[in-house]
Image 1 (tube, rainbow, N blue to C red):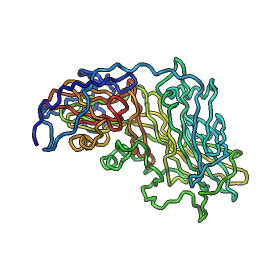
Image 2: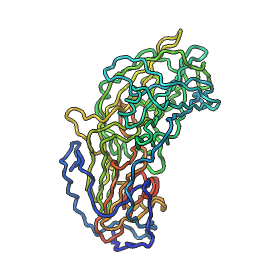
Image 3: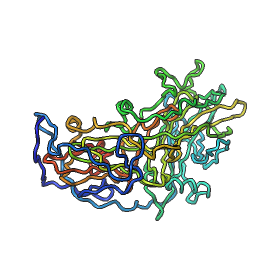
Image 4: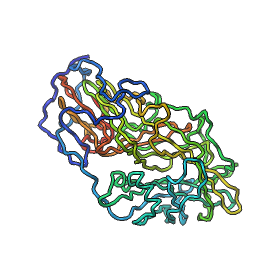
Length: 502
């Protein structure tokens, strides 16, 4: 191990950033007081005081005999983000439905219902129909909500930070009477004008999902076994398997997983009793009776972010007052095989801030909060056909379990920092962090956590949207070597996703 001293501590190039970019500040500061600032790696919540950083040699930075890559520009001060730019006009939601083989499902009726309508007490409801749409020749559909929502729908949106979460579903019968069904999950950003929220702006920028329909022949309700309710924390092995958290990917690969952990290799969702329905076009849908109820609900600790600190830096992460995350929704037609179809935003209040500060140096972990999830049974009855069941796993709200921690640490992700990771990073994403300076991500969307939680035995994905009160921060010390940082998926001055450190 050799020592580097004073490498490129002053660069002529300064990086100019705008308010809508990731915000870079100068000086040292701590995040606002958080309800949980854990001082150890135990699952509990520590005191609200900042933990003492682990002492290390601040003037020694590991390197090798090879020439180091160019570091990029030196970061400078930038303005703080303002309020969201107001949006106007009624919100529109969109999507695409296909057959199992990917061919467009044209001329089909898509029904939209509110996600947050299903009561927690397990009672049956007939979902409120917000509206219907008809798929075009390419399977695409769109629906524009009324400018003034019915009071019940507005209440759901207000409780979710100006976002109305909707299920867009198709139910139709094949010529032999087999039910073919599919569900997409979409967000309508309904807060406009002076009431515009970050969540509403993000919802309007969402990319439409493509969802395939599949046969549903399950006539008996499947209830999650109690054994699956054992809390499963994010582990090191999960982090290693979570390739979607790498800079190379922003999508979840969680498709056709088994609820009991068994292999789904060779699983063919479109084949039932030897009949392949992947190319079978059903009737155009409509006319079936749908009811829903919650089978079970439980709290699971869910990864919502991470922070990194290498060399002599320290890390902070804060998740303040609202969930501000988007979940991939797990769906199933048999209660055994699950896939992620669509995403919904959860923007409801947590009631307080959680996070950590001054962790490091040579420290990097994910951060988890307890989320209540529901396993929802959807019962569909069509004329002349017995009732069929399909399922979805829905995040509901921040909910501390009895005797549980308000937040806790997840997997160690320090392997994403250091010299090797720095050499493998994209040069355009690199920057230099000067002595006693800090960099803070306060806007944009994080990378996707494909292994955010295991819920009723099923893996769900999540990504967190940074805002003025949801951020990752890295602060430099006064070591003699240069402090190098880079974004996981973009420039530090743009939408880096996560700041890595060397």
